[in-house]
Image (cartoon, rainbow, N blue to C red):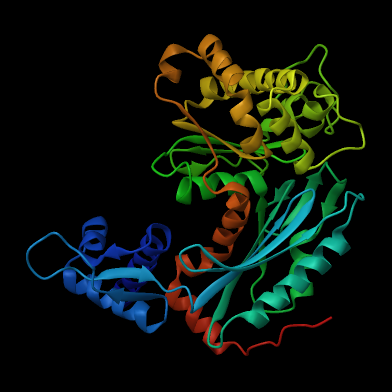
Length: 408
């Protein structure tokens, strides 16, 4: 009986902390209603989490109700943090993220398009990680490390099975980054679009939706699908490669995967720049934004390029709506910049190609988290163990000798 009660208490601690981590300040009364627990039990749980430095309680400024106000419970960002890393095609990002999803400190560096570059990437990220830990306030604890990569990731060990844009094949990214960081928690790695989808559902444009599609544009197009509140990951963890849905099989552009006419081949970076008549040596987000700006300024070639890309994007989105009946489709990464100028064509394809009942309620939105979506998703990987068992993780962390950050 004692063991069962302890398991229930630890489960309740985890549930309460997750509510506060994802939703921000929540009253004790609201937590009791959500969890089906009485006031004294909620009080005991919050007191334990407060003693561990994970939450703090404060009186609300205004209640609008008679009687003694219920204390607000809010995440304490200063005690527990994670290191989050994001590897995009052209950039490397790192951040120290506090409980509650607050980005406390960040770093970034350009990533040259120079082929397989595992050593260069992990060296840069490990250096950022050491800087971020050294800048953290005394008494704070790193409780996890999460990383996002623009490729297909093997669950469990962070192996990049296939990263087509720079030729990564079976690269031990997670293991190597953990080794170079040289301290405590193993590195949890996820696909950038999968993590972007989860981040948008938890903190961005998908809040309140249990079924959504997230399309992330970088050089190509990745995707994440949430079904019934859970990520659709596939048998081996390689699901939702939406960019490799074939939309133009007959005269499509060649794709980096070896096929032709894939969605990312028709709407990705090179497709838009070629359609806009930009030189072959021009690439990157600034080049894409220049096309969008020229289209906004009335340039007919740039406008036509956005319409062409928008038409293929609309075909892909229409197929996804028919397949998954999402409540919202979210455009992130470079598609966040492209979508406004292509929205008319996307909506036209949905109007002509989506089953009437499937398009009745679907919304189209751009990412609310912007370029932080994948970084925020990576941070959630780092927080996973703490949120599953806050008491146990902090006890193990306190008992483990503190390793000095590796230098050089």
